Length: 322
Image (cartoon, rainbow, N blue to C red; front, side, top):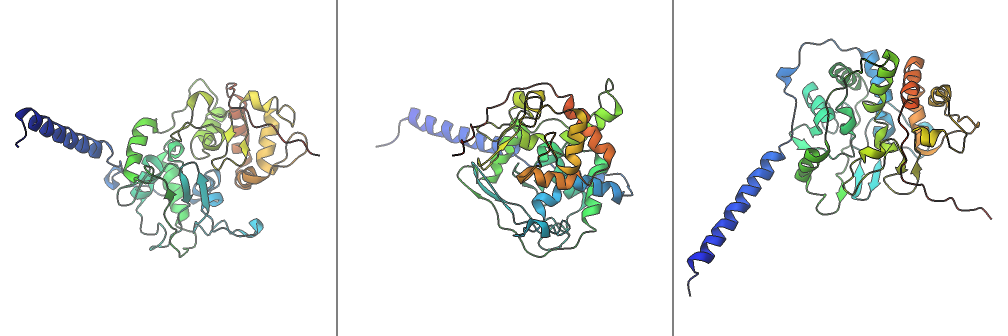
């Protein structure tokens, strides 16, 4: 019994649609990259590269873990730390200058492509556990300085395992669709109506500092909920809570209202207005911001204090002690 012309036509049509859809998916998800030819000659500023390294929190994630946090060597960026999240577990890669296991064979253009477009050397999508959604706002010179500084650090051997993700998140090409939906904006553009200090703070917070990546709630696909940016939320592993750092949170925190000077001081020594000290993930952040020039901490505080008030998700009630 032969198929009718109508059924044959429908089958051919379905095959054609599938092929067209597959080609469209492949084209739309091609990883973007920065060509080396687009980069003008440049003499790196290593001192600025170190500043970008500190504000970027590179050591907090990429330094080789140690059971004793006080003995972590900030210069040994062999990676290995596990980052659990609702989609699975990511393992922070080796970004030391090791040519085999790290980024020692990466070109400057490779590095810029990673930070701006979330594309690794060889044209592979990087998962947004790496905060390129913020790093893409960094200035070109700052990214080049950071790359030059990383090359001065010791190479560390040891390739880190790939992520353990559930289906369909383990299909890396799908990250291209995620980028189409959520990878927005480009390099930071100063607001001429604001002060130089405010603009510096806005740049550091939204670019290399990637503060919103932790201090904002996320939707079911792992993207920041823009209407609640900086309004706090659960940590990726769901075990703790990141506070609201808009006026809604800072003016009604357990530590009392925060003045701008309190924010700047906190970024230096980790002490809250009530005299308590930060712990956990924020303690790691303070280990980075405390190394910044005082003017940069003041600029960050100036910008944070200017954020519009936003009500985010409510943290879980604390259990009463017996």
